[in-house]
Length: 437
Ligand code: MEV
Image (cartoon, rainbow, N blue to C red; front, side, top):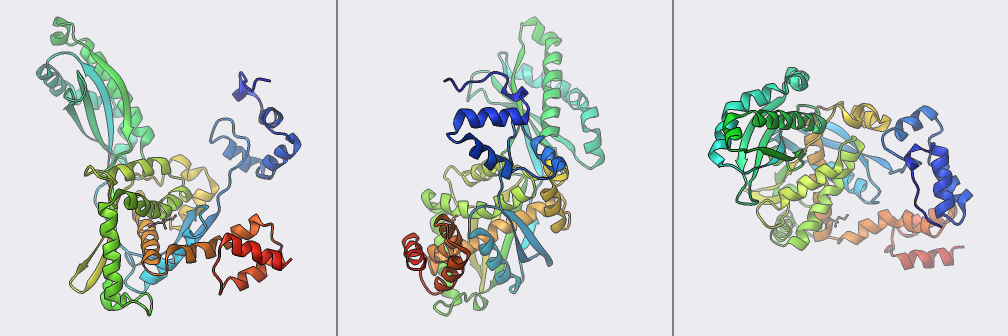
């Protein structure tokens, strides 16, 4: 039987669930029951979630954890983290505590500019286009005045429009390259609305432009869209401490630790295979906070990795070095985040997370997210160059393995005790369950 369907989105939620479970599952009632377990009891809350997307049939849960003891620019924070990976929150907590007693994290906003582009084709002389653009630039900006008025009142708006000649890349290809300040909103809708309006005005002004009419020239807009590459919307997070205070274990002095740490970062700078994993560790922290605060983690991921490759080779986002007798560890991240609009007022847990963070503005949130990334990176590299990653990771993963074995409460308690002093592996846990029925 064909599994194609017309008009699926028009079915009610119950009808969708009936169709999907009957068509795709051997045990339809069981499949239905799983979905209903992941629906909220409160109809209003469930409706709110259903309305976020099309064809919603259940909620997909991630644990929301919290990492206390962060000190950022002298202020204390407990950071919310939505993530499924067992060891991430524990690692964040460990780093937070370590650095809280060494001056905490310091941050700096290096820029807040966002970018949008109108990509178009023009088959005339570049000079003609340049003079047309110069004449009409203000009209283009003015055509967005009703769209930008609220944003301008909040201190944002369109910062600049440039004409860029890209005809060396593709024949007749040009761009209007715009920079924006979107204050506390991520700004995707604002930017895209402005771009579409400007593209429209640009095309219609071109259609009436004498010099173009004479030569039968026209502008063909291909697309208008923001860029998720935001190298000028940048934040830096840093920790530093004297080498004497850097002793992380009795087996390694502060200077030995610092040297090995710096070496491992040099490797991540030069070697893309390592850089990707190194940066993945940073994103463990970044994404968890970005998700908990209702921001667009796909946009952040895309922008961050492009930034990591900005010099032509994919490289580490963080750097470590010695400054006198101080160890310094820094992370620069392009982050386009919002604390108003989007999910921030709609998702109850996002609202909750924002309140936990003291209702930050977008700049504060950039700082917090960068700190979460740096903390996570410190914890990972620290483990890698000392005990190895598996010891801590598998300890945190123990409950998952026990759950895979459907361990009872009693078995779990005994196993947690036993594995305090034994190495956690999948087979060691299997053996333990067998010998403790
Ligand atoms: C695992 O999720 C992240 C790490 O691989 C990061 C790293 O290697 O730096 C531990």
